[in-house]
Image (cartoon, rainbow, N blue to C red; front, side):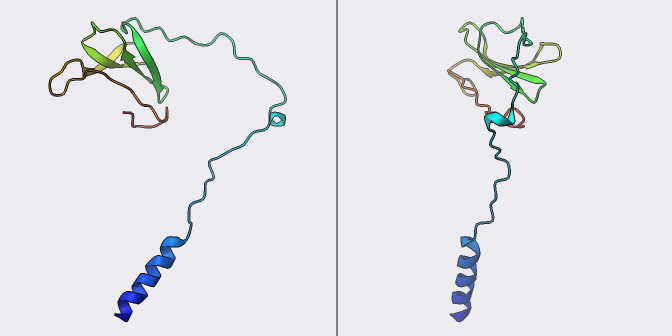
Amino acid sequence: MKKLFFLYLVISFCSCSNHYKDDTTLAFQRKDMPRPISLSQPDTIAIEDALDPLDIFLVKDSLILVSNRNASSAYKAGLYSLNNNKLIKEIAPKGNGPKEFISCTLDIRDANSDIFT
């Protein structure tokens, strides 16, 4: 019984400590950037294959993920190459059956992540 009580105390003390330290948060002030820079003539991405895009996401600076708004499209989303603006793969086939989608909402948490939903 004493061993169980001692084990419980060790676990409770170890679990209560805070080992997490957030070093990724940076705070900027206006004085950190004394000269304003105006961005002009941005690069435009023209994808001829995308019929009627609803949402466009840039993933890892090389892939473009597009959700289609057009109801006549056979797929709800497509993956395109940024290098040549050509279709790599259509995803989320439209329909009511198994492995088909009525609607599709893309979620990109981070443009540098390997995962999107």
